Image 1 (tube, rainbow, N blue to C red):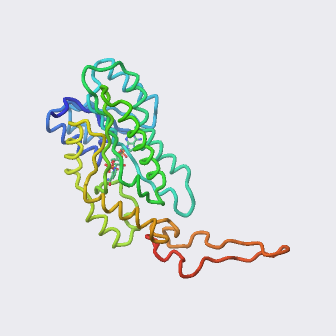
Image 2: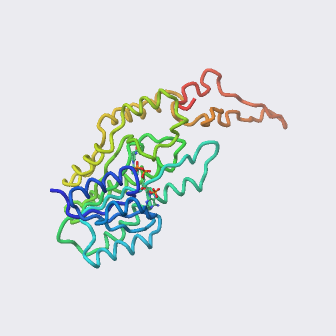
Image 3: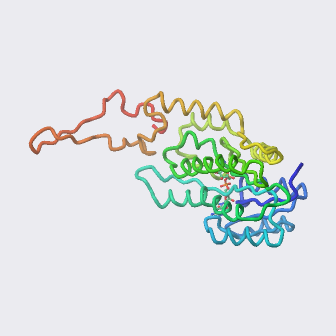
Length: 288
Ligand SMILES: NC(=O)c1ccc[n+]([C@@H]2O[C@H](COP(=O)([O-])OP(=O)(O)OC[C@H]3O[C@@H](n4cnc5c(N)ncnc54)[C@H](OP(=O)(O)O)[C@@H]3O)[C@@H](O)[C@H]2O)c1
């Protein structure tokens, strides 16, 4: 059965917006949580309750959840979808960019969980859905924040889904392969063959919405979408282990070798430079 009410984070574009359109079309009561006002979206859906909250702000999220609970308006389904992706680990590791991704993708979800788990037991089950990624098993080394945030998010939901099994809180996650939205990074930097492979294993926005709405009418812990992306990620996982240098970031995105020379002390005050064996040098690096 469709939920009667839903809270969705990040509805200004992509998957969040498609979910909002889907549930609005079914007359479901919606609370939309965005970090900024979007006048076009808000005027198009006058029946939606738009809350301007940045999910990185723990206090604001807590106030929102507690406020909705107090007036019995906290939806029975929460899709914690807001997320970003940044190149944070190319020429050098960029801590600020990394933190912004972790703050949004990981803490931006976790901020909801404390207040939710402190609520009194509800009469009806409440589904809490994380939008994770198949990239949590084979990370893009240049987007380290994205990889590690989704890995940690999936681990947290794995634990909570078992810990709260049989209670009124149902923790679920959807593990997405590529879906063409604004979140794609490195669009212009990937070699054409990689873009072709990614596109042929991508899901659609409609398909993603259908997958999420299928998941939330069950108590299943997780759902993969699209199924065809699963063997792709398994292949990449295996390839990273078996093929030297494959998609391991051994070259910068400009194609420059990364700190390949290692100075080695040979004797009194003398320093020689040890090079990598020529035949192995980044030959199969995916960004090469
Ligand atoms: N597309 C894919 O290939 C793919 C694959 C796996 C998982 N996912 C996951 O799917 C989710 C949705 O991504 P998408 O593909 O739909 O990307 P998107 O089109 O870029 O949408 C991201 C949404 O998150 C919002 N957002 C970002 N930071 C926020 C913050 N601090 N507070 C509140 N809202 C914030 C954005 O709002 P602004 O407009 O204000 O930036 C936007 O509405 C993400 O969690 C992503 O990791 C996507």
